[in-house]
Amino acid sequence: MKAIGIVCSPRKHGNSDVLVREVLKFTGSENFEVFYPNEMNIRGCQACYSCKEQGICIVKDDMQEIYNGIQKSDVVVFGTPIYMAGTAAQFKLVLDRLFAFLGPAPKFESRLPKGKKAALVVSQGYENVKEYETHINQMKEALLSLGFDGVEVLQTPGLNELGEAARHDDLMQEARKIGQALGQA
Image 1 (tube, rainbow, N blue to C red):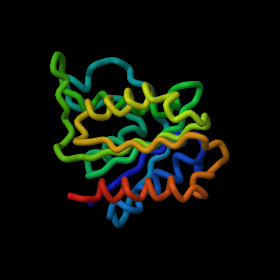
Image 2 (cartoon, helix red, strand yellow):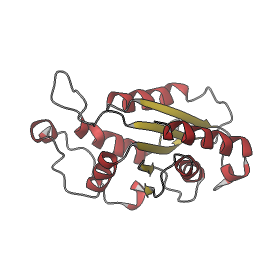
Image 3 (cartoon, one colour):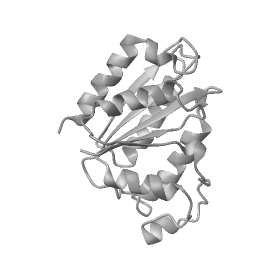
């Protein structure tokens, strides 16, 4: 079992990071890798559609490392905070570039190997768990459209301090349960 994390928060060791790592620890993956797009050189999608013609993105930047990680993994755990009533820019940047995993129009069929599972960890400062439900469902549906067999969601409202998720036993337990579920064949 191989698992990777993609932490799309600008705050390393923040709540998204803490929870993504906790999910990964319980997938059964002996050696997981975590990518931090905020620290990588990743350009936005150029809408050139070369990926549809050639099967790969032609933009040569650090996104190639994430593509390779996803290709080689059984489980991918995405983490993003909610900023300004929506996903963090780093998540949107990565998500847009994952368009390369879809084949040509009109079907846009997934090029990902079958059987890949995903999780989406969403931290938010606002206490109301329902407030960003629409955005979270959109993120989940986008990941499903890329060809992941399922997307587990962990939404964590009311987190503002750096890494405070680690002090919430209920959240850490939920992260562990998701990791275990992802790790089951």
